[in-house]
Length: 432
Image 1: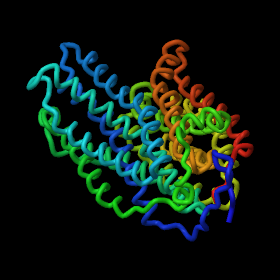
Image 2: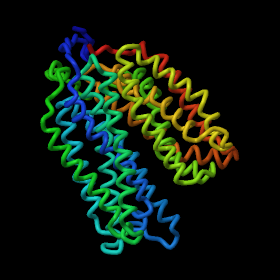
Image 3: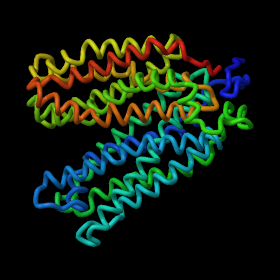
Image 4: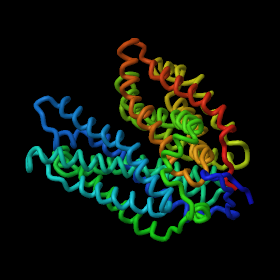
């Protein structure tokens, strides 16, 4: 049995953990899948949301308004992470889990039902924007909560447990693209703009409701039960006061995952078709190949991270991306490498960081403030490195004239993550 230091200076003896409880891990991961599902469907159906809530004679202005609301949901995540992680560190992981998913489910269903601008005027975009803000608050606590929960439930298999969380999250992307393909296949464009996009949000709400019912079976984690009589009074303040170094390390290590996912999962398909000149269908299929291989490889890397130091695996991935991102974008522009093979390699290399960062973040903080530390690191990295990816890469394309310049941004973030990872051992806290 391993003993770790608590925030208040007393030792915490953690219970011995047996083999991983697959059912618990999957149940804890459902909300993360819903998070990624919501993320992808908003982008997919942005043009219909724009026409419904932000009508304008200029369709570009309308679309920009819709993406601004999308960004509001992203920017509200750090605040939500603070709120729900405070609940998680003070009152229990399970309570925070249930609250965030229940609220997010209700909000997603409400977004599907809000009347458009034509029906209620200015109230429509105001209500929709407010719902998106609240949705972002909930999302800010979901992934950090899932990572914290599974690691404390199965500390001896933390790498694989976190890998399953990330794998389930990525299935949300697959589900979102599948729902989009189905709806576009059976509905006419006018029907899609009228009510088709609402079906996708309603599906998300239904999945959330099912997840809430299933999550009722989850118990509190052994690690939290062991310290629940002496929780930190203000966990986030403790992070900034006592653990600023681990927080910076966590932000740096999570930055690569956020930038990579933003560029590959969201921006790469339009980049390949509009900038690199690939057929849209080919571009979409190639990106799906990358995401599919990424998801499978995440499980393998997570499993490997329980056998070898996972910080080494993260460094391998960061170094490979730092050295290979710009050449990869050059190959896309020049069509010098088969795009399927190239994006297969992109997916496999990305798994080294994606498959290890979750467990690495949880290692940085003791039980009393773990949820808050993970939430701060994850959401700050998301707001900066994922939220600004599109803006920075667009500026680079415009300012430099180099069509492969997004690779420079990704390489720079990977180098930053590599350097941050060098300090991980200094602050690591063993869980078992």
